[in-house]
Image (cartoon, rainbow, N blue to C red; front, side, top):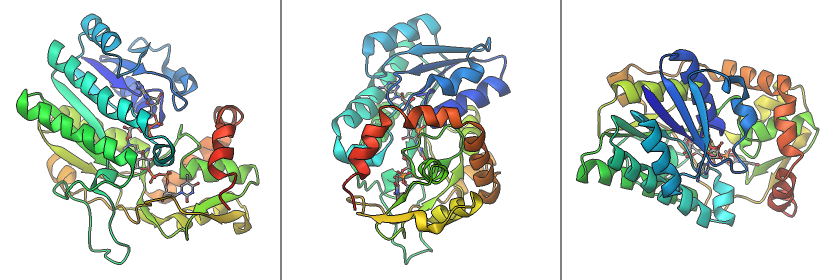
Length: 340
Ligand code: NAD
Ligand code: DAU
């Protein structure tokens, strides 16, 4: 089978390309990535020479480029990870989120419609459901929870989901959608909370904690997300949405303190800064459907996953030091410089 993976030079798409090329030597994994600030060829370096992997530098919103790839490669399955993914950046500059996440998705869907595919899978997020209150720990996001977005990022991802559902119904396209909670693991770009804590702590830099650090996220080890998507594209039912989550809720402060303790660093590094505007309080996924229908459950406990993640960052300093020494530094100064 020919499987197109968009956004494969990013965090989760990169982990997915590693997972799929290793697990299915008989399938061809065709990665499309624009290589934005978040795309990194070093993430793909370990699989670049594999006979079942190829890389195409292209923008998913560039219709001609995408159609050309489809015409030449005749994909059977498309998994769309490519997106602008950072909430803070969407608050400062929403437009590119609309172009990539909405227009880009529509171009991918049109290409699938024009050339025909067996399955289009949209990698979505639990953020499309908005947030849950901190004092209602009995509430979880199910696939029936109404869409109720907070940030330009989540609004753009929800728009993409609606387009996928419209194409599935109107054009009878074989589509599935997954909505996952926060991932962590190797190759995570250091603008996001967990790799930012690790990189700053290793450099004895302050850890910026938004607000009081009480917000809750449901952390899932990235490989478990890859396994879930693999199950959905093979055995998931067309037209269905699947929630993916770790049953692993933690406040941001708990996460920061855990990482500091594992790195043997002082909690004095914690620095409370002005909150993110519109900051979602709590995400919590109910993964009953994917468990019952596809037999998926998260396999990596947080204790083990966070240890593995920290070890990876310790053993791959060059990967993240190259990032934080470049253009990223300007972003960091702009985002955190006057935040106080
Ligand atoms: P990321 O920012 O690390 O990677 C995104 C990748 O997409 C990069 O390689 C980038 O170069 C590429 N890209 C961006 N715009 C593109 C375009 N126009 N054309 C082609 N490629 C483009 O993101 P991530 O954290 O790996 O997230 C991947 C997907 O998973 C996203 O769709 C995101 O919404 C979703 N998701 C992420 C999480 C999470 O915790 N990180 C959780 C749930 C869902
Ligand atoms: O839930 C899935 C989503 O998880 C994905 O759709 C997004 O692409 C992904 O980026 C992630 O979004 P979050 O906003 O939850 O992740 P982030 O790592 O940016 O922040 C996690 C929490 O930590 C959030 O409550 C904000 C807080 N935070 C973040 C940063 C970067 C801080 O307190 N300080 C920081 O410096």
